[in-house]
Image 1 (cartoon, rainbow, N blue to C red):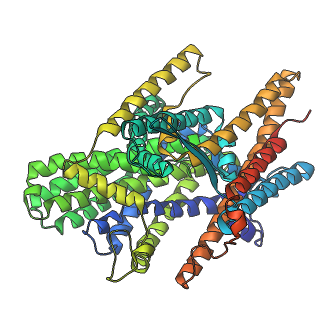
Image 2 (tube, rainbow, N blue to C red; image 1 turned 90 degrees about the vertical axis):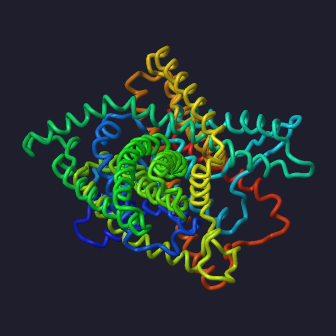
Image 3 (cartoon, helix red, strand yellow; image 1 turned 90 degrees about the horizontal axis):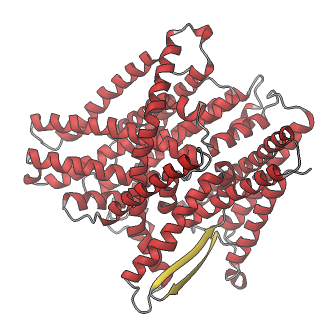
Amino acid sequence: VISMAVLKFFKGSNILENNMVQTQASSAGCLSSIIFVLPGMLMLGYWQGFPFWQTTLVCAVGGSLGVIFTIPLRHVMVVESDLPYPEGVAAAEILKTGDAGSGEKGSNSKEGFKLLLSGGLSSGLFAFIVNGLHLAGDGIAFCFKAGASIFNLSTGFSFALLGAGFLVGITGGIAILTGTVFAWGAAVPVLSFLEPASEGQDIASYANSLWVSKVRFIGAGCIAISAVWTLLVLFKPLVNGIRMSMQAFSSDDSSRSRDFDDLSIKSMLWLTALFFVIIVATFYNFIESAGIEVEYAWLLVFIATLIAFTVGFMVASACGYMAGLIGSSSSPISGISIISIIVTSLIFLGVGSYTGVFETEGGSKFMTALAIFTVSVIIAISSISNDNLQDLKTGHLVGASPRLQQIALLIGCVVGAVVIAPVLELLYEAYGFTGAMPRPNMDPAMALGAPQATLMTTIANGIFSSQLDWTYIVIGIVVGAIVISIDLFLKLSSNSRLSLPPLAVGIGIYLPASINVPVFIGSLISYVILRHIRKSKLTEEDKENAIKDSMHRGTLLSAGFIVGESLIGVLMAFIIVLSVTSGGSESPLAIEIESLSSFAPVIGLILFVLGIVLLYKKARFNK
């Protein structure tokens, strides 16, 4: 949106330039997900700051590998797949609507712009009222007990998630709701029955603590086995996609279809070799500084590099699929982080025992740090792969060259990586992280929580000290296997008309209900509109045209919802940073009206319902 506004001042600007800007910017921004794990090095006490070159190289190489690993997946997951890619489709609609040369003229173009604008303004205003002025609640919850069991019915209020749900569709929405119902309608009640809350304890906070400490690990286990299953399902089409790409590269440029215009196999191999050398050097520098014997140091370098490449490719595939299914912003990167740290720590536990590293002074801390450092590469890979297939989907819809987009993504990764280390160091020096303060006498209340990094460090420590409870991860794997079986049965019995995507169920268990429920509501709106059209007395041709028109209008409004809330989020973050750094509060624009505070959730609910009505009325078919 910003690039569209700026490039309008330059003669000859077009939709492809705008697409290239958002492609490069998004890849640079996604590397910030490294904060999910790297602060753990400070919490562990292994680092006293963020070394520039090690941090930069980990981010640059990991991000670039995320681009390379998803190039073979593009044709399978973007061109031939029916995955919705919510943000990618939304971005394409915004670009088409804002481009004067996109082919839309007159009333159609004006109507599209009005839908986009109305979605953006309504979503932005709602987000400002909720997160800026604090006059309305951002969700509502009803918690109650049935015997010793605790049930919690809740939803968040978000126009952006509502729009994302509309784009996701009913299949993904039902799967996510299934996971949510399992988490809050089965797992939490059973666990609270087995481990009742103490007398006088707040039942809502206790239920949430059970979900955070136990149920989310069930979700992580479900995501893990679902990710492996997804890889197995995608293996044959992936091989076919690579084969077709290689055939396309062997043809001359004039006959090559845009669908296969990726970076050449030769370029990918050269880049992979370059990144391999850089990551080997980075790992060796990290390991050698610990004083490990040379032969064991090279063994650890080999193992760390192998993990980064193999696990990295697996999570790239899983993250690309999840981003296509539910969207990049809702894709559970932290769940992938949990799986990655568990796998990596288990491997290093065996290697460390074999080499005798644990018997040396500080050996356990070093191996824990090495596991975290290795996973940081995997997180960089997963965060980029989570986003760049969205960008490539946008490019596919607006007619961009995938090859040029992939080059832009690689440049964005390098530029973003250079910025990450100084920013993390600045945050550390200004606020510190929970359990890792740069100076004595700093206010711990101001420390950044970094909950994912804390969790990663806790899991790694638990594995190396043999104190990690595997119960809930194993339960999650069993649940995932059951869901996979149900999905297969539904597909076989309905000729693939019905399905229950296992990854989406795992996401529903892992993510909070405040995210999942609005997504489901959005998908339900889409389903109701489509069902209304299909039940109408129109001819088949008119039905298809009506469906296309309704989905187009709904997509534009949903895109506006996503953009409006996102822009207000960026604006509010900027205002809060200015306020905090100048000694102000974290809610500088909040209006405190005591008589309204108890009604804030109700006000939020009313406004959210208005958003639902707006989406339904604007997208529905009017005969």
